[in-house]
Length: 301
Ligand SMILES: [Zn+2]
Ligand SMILES: [Zn+2]
Image 1 (cartoon, protein in one colour):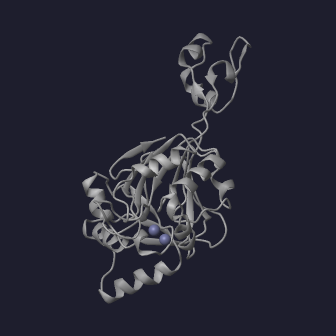
Image 2 (cartoon, protein in one colour):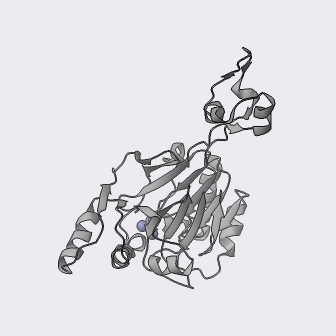
Image 3 (cartoon, helix red, strand yellow):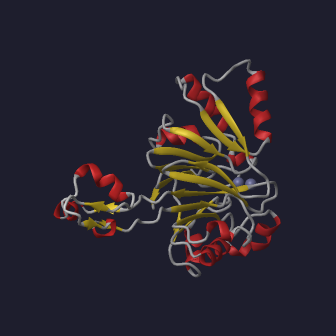
């Protein structure tokens, strides 16, 4: 799973930083989380293709998280998209899009499946063989949702040499990987665990959108491999952060520590800060594995 940052600034674009958007690539599918203004240009700039994009998740309806969506969905239609697109977002976005299409007397050339997010409760949004996506409530000035993307476990890993040693025919390999034992013609039973190594757990990525400091969503993000937590302000502005339902870099680090995640990404920086190094320094005092995100950079789990 790879996370590519397209925008890591808060409300206003500043210092070449854009409003929030990021691409998650998992099992060759492309997911878009939030879609701030300029997202389609950032996708072009960083070589992100929309043809594999089938799911878009919008955390909340502050403009810095969705003003890029009308442009993106319209461009995909102009560029010949025909495959359906799933949009998971607060319910009010449905009528906003409908109103825009109506005013422009235009239609998309593909089906836009709108999935309203449940307010105040965690919900499974997507589940397939390779991964799942859940939403969960965070605490912001308006209804806002975090997302947890979980890769499925890849199953038992086959050891081909051992299989040959025990004379297991190739056609039976998949069943061995599914945990079945193999009984040879001579009556000898080869145990699945003799010729496999245990399954590795799937990776977990948690995105907590815009939120004030709260431990309310800890159970949803616990032990994630990677956490993206907003850090709009530095600690000196903690009071302002609380008033505006945002967090500081120190608070993001406290959450990362409490959730026992492996790595923390910081983003959603206020445009009052040009230099982001102090964000790194403040957070590192509390949690060691911190990255101040950079647009265009990819973080692999
Ligand atoms: Zn925001
Ligand atoms: Zn917001």
